[in-house]
Every structure is written in C-alpha cells, then in structure tokens.
Length: 203
Image 1 (tube, rainbow, N blue to C red):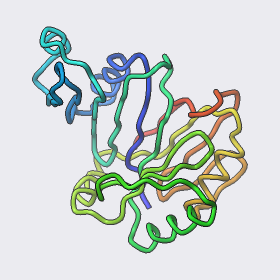
Image 2: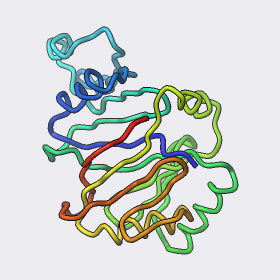
Image 3: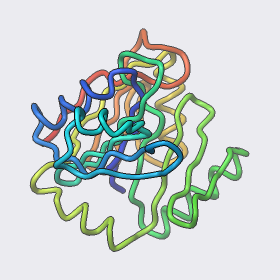
Image 4: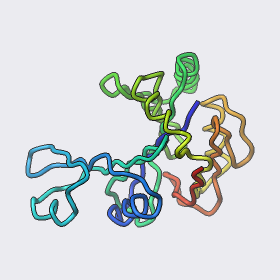
C-alpha cells in the first residue's frame, strides 16, 4: 500500500502551488481548466500572467516530485483542506477494501474505469487504484522523494483515524494510521468536514 496522492482545496491556489514548486522542488505536471467553453491544459512554460491574458480559468493544478503527486483546486478555504487521499493497492487489497466499503454501505464511484472513489462519511474521500503501469513508474521515484508523514487538523481525530484504519485494514491508534511507509496523523482543533492540511514530512 502506498499513499502517493492528496487533493487540496484552497482559495490560495497560486501561493500553495508556489510553495511546492519553489520551496519543495516539485515540478508542474499541468494546470487544467478552460478558456471560454473550451477545456484545455498547460504544462510548464506558461506563467500565471500568460494564462491570465488568455482568460484561462483554473480547475486544478497538478504537481509532482518523486513518488508524490499533489493536486491543488480552487475553493473557499484559505488554509488548504484535503478532499481525498490517493492510494496504490495490490489487486487483493483493492478488492478487499471495496468489499469493506460495501459492508459499511459507503458510496463507491467509478470514474471512467481509471479511478475509484470511496466516501468515508468522515469528511474526506479515498481514491483507490489497483496495480497500473503508470503508478509503477510514479512509485519508482520513491528514492528521490516520498511522503513519510501527513498531519491533518480535524474536528474528530479519533473518528477520522479509525475510519481510515478500518477501511484500509491498516494499524491505527486514537489519532494515527500507518499506511505502508506513511504515517497519517489527525491533530485536534480542526474544522468540521474536510480535514485541514497541517504538516508534511518528505524523505
């Protein structure tokens, strides 16, 4: 099991993106959005001033380094909140996780046969992937950089940790879940609903 992806929602997209690109050494995969009614994407080489002149409206920005992929989406919160966490699972774990979701009567959504989302009813979703060639390529970047810890501020850390641990059959405590090589910790005094990004440790 690998936690390779998380999807952030914030009103400060450009500032959050700049932190990953400038301070953390991530690279821009693409900025996805539209110009008028036409859906389009721009890779690195186009600055925000260029995109503003073209009337580009951002839907999401995708950035990547090593075995970590982060998406930043415009939204209402100044401090980034996590919409979902993305996991690479082996075939057996993928099937078993979906079975546990079904037993718990959680909503499961298939997106074009490429992505499977599971609602946790705890304020965030999971994006689940069985083995894929493109995932193998991404995870091969782990020696360069991978996510060792992800700390999320939440209103009910115990609920959020137990939900994640039970759904993925991963060891957990009252506030933390060990997911492969990554520790996810929920810290108190956070917002209701989507947890707020608090800290990351990359190695």
